[in-house]
Length: 479
Image 1: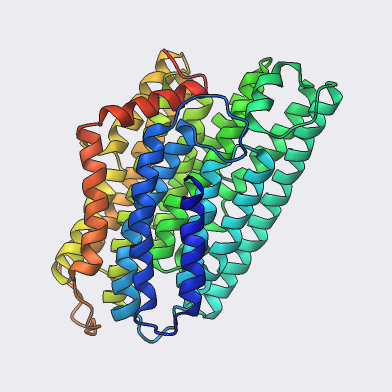
Image 2 (image 1 turned 180 degrees about the vertical axis):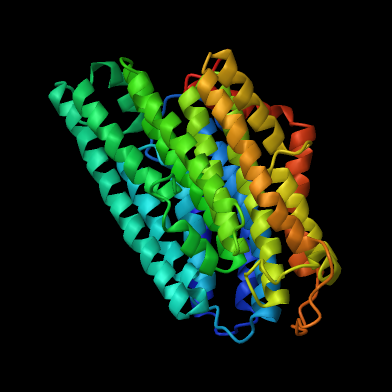
């Protein structure tokens, strides 16, 4: 039955390519996204920590990412119908719709992969399927962004492949049966050669770090996020980032099971996490392009994820909460910013003001999304960052905890004037009427995503909380 989650989007991509009608083709997206999320929910509730010999199976970590990705894609799919049929009728969607479905299938495979070779293939597939989506606008800037994304992503994937080779060689040096199956690696991890394990970790962290956009491997993000449609930016920041981080968690599981010098694995995560936040803080101050603003916000939040993983133990629950909250809120921000982009016909924040008057719903959602991603309660991000900060001090990471809180404050103070300047005030008198208005097709999807984040921040369902605790336990989480 799990194969249905992989096959449904693949069949949908074939069907989308064969459909000739530009108006009817986008309807396949919600038609397939609804059963995909329903099946994801069913399989996620059945996930446990059992040992499996299957290459494709679902554990709590995969289930958390699968739910996040599937829910995000569900609302992006409904948004895409109005976007493609009404807002962009001049642009063919024959490539976009199949590519979206192929990307969904690849992201699902990342969540189910229990073999590191298959995991690498699925991560590479997400990179390739996203490229035509970034190029959707088909202008000089979008092709430049696409090539930069592909070049840096390809280098990262190549480095990750070397890390996978080194990990396999560590099994040969140890004199055990060579394997890349995750459960088998976890069982034999203490016997693996520590030198080759460390070499594998360096290459895998660098490779998957480039996929995540951890600084200093983030340089593709501002261009790709800036030139991609808001719909694609949401999936980049919320979906592919979550999948890339899951790949890094699989590597961390093996290193943790091997024992030995865990400081060798934790310290780079702490350093890269803080550096990502510091770099984001520097570029978020007076940022003149609101899509690049969201790109550097994404750099900040992947930095928080890496930092929480480096802290470990009790911070891991906060990390998984942050993974979910960040994934869903990026949908709110990118979809609402896409509406603002079309209304103002510009990404520049310098001449943009009065969004709340011009587009009351979209402007309000963008403002609310900013406050939620900045950890205002009852956002899920408030819970996650509070747990991470408390556990940093509890484990006597005094400098890390202090820098974490200071950088959060700097980032908020850097973003707030830009966002408030965009949404408040009166629209410029010289602004031409684009004809774009708030409609339920472009407002309801980000509103539902925001509602999900606020509800989860106020009340966490028991089965989901159990899933989070089980996922944290797989990474050594505990008091």
